[in-house]
Amino acid sequence: MSIEFAPAISGAPASSWKRYPAYRDSGVEWLGEVPEEWETWKVTHGFQKLGSGTTPKSDDPQYYNDIIPWVTTSELRETVITDTKSKLSEKAMKDYSSLRIYPPETLLFAMYGATIGRMGILGIPATVNQACCAFTGSKFLDSKFTFYWLWMARPILIALSVGGGQPNLSQDDLRKIRIPAPSLPEQRAIAAFLDHETGRIDTLIEKKRRQVELLQEKRAALISHAVTKGLDPDVKMKDSGVEWIEEVPEEWGVIRVKLLEGNDTSVVQTGPFGAQLHASDYLDDGVPLILIRNVRDLKIDETDIPRISKEDAERLSMYRLNIGDIVFSRVGSIGRIALCTEREKGWLISGQMLRLRIQNPILDSKFSLYAFSSKCLLTFVELQSVGSTRESINTDILRNMPIPIPPLSEQRAIAAFLDRETGRIDNLTIKIHESISKLREYRTALISAAVTGKIDVREGV
Image (cartoon, rainbow, N blue to C red):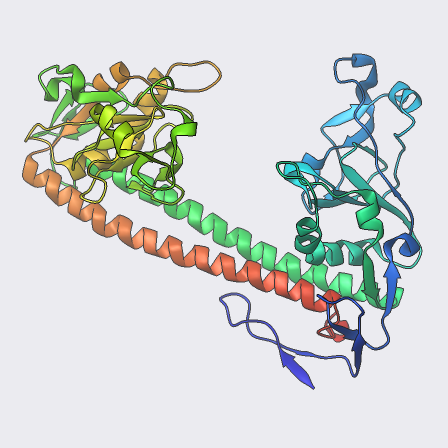
């Protein structure tokens, strides 16, 4: 008997996997049946010890040096750990009784906080902090097999955690886990199969990620070239007078933003300051307020957008958007830009954003969107940005930004060209992301099926 398991996805052809000859009830409601010959082990029976560690006093340098590897949950990345960022001293090991050195092949599981559920396997002797649960001294459970089993089960384990903002799993929670498992040789065979198959999938995912990166680089280069060099490869060029723009077509001009509106200071508007609007004012319904996270791919994304009351929106009406306005991220992720369309008319910008309102008829709004998002103009922003720990820009920086100005008809032709070409790139990028999602789903399903005995992979090793 065989079972169709792998979905037909690019790079992962459909395959048929055999099932085991007979099955029995696992005794675990969410797990269902497992192969008849598999045993069920408590974690505490399979491993001699479940332990943890601690964090020595952080401001005492005598506890930290380059001797004993010390693992924190941030270093649990579902891989074998061969080095750590921090090292502890022998004095730390003496002064803190909860610290011990765990041997290679120890399985680590993050028990709480933002990293809950992360895992790793020690490739070196090391100690750990208090958020790591260490599974060591295995007699009946192979560490790598258990790693894959916990990887499959961790969404359920995390769902059982307690604590609101700080989900928590205790060692007692992990001790209660029952793992249906075959003999040690078969566990190792399953783990070897999954090492091979997940490695193949991960390699394919990485290639697709690189494809996305190359497409984004191509997209950025396409925009920058079009808004500074135009579409005619044979056009005569001249020096733009701006180092990072270099040459532009002979008939083009280069002008600073503030001069497009007769030096009008309102051409760039900062969003409301914190004293004018607080996060506590946000509502589920009302007028949308644009944060940095709502600006991506030159569009305004309504996903998880906060809203404010009509009364607050009226009070802050100077921060409303009109069609053709450009919103520009002001702090942190500098360079996120979007154009206000009919849908966003009347929405408000937050204090994280700047609004550019250029109404000069010599500049097409769609061309200006592409121009402001180009690499050369973002270089100007980066060079002029202020703030030592967090980059930020202000109204003066944008008002003094130089922008290439082709004839209006050429601006519209460039914008249409970029709409078409970036649209093709964006569609291809979406398809690659969909392919990556399917590969991840396949990877998850393959691990789950193998470690629970839904498929027999012993002949595939």
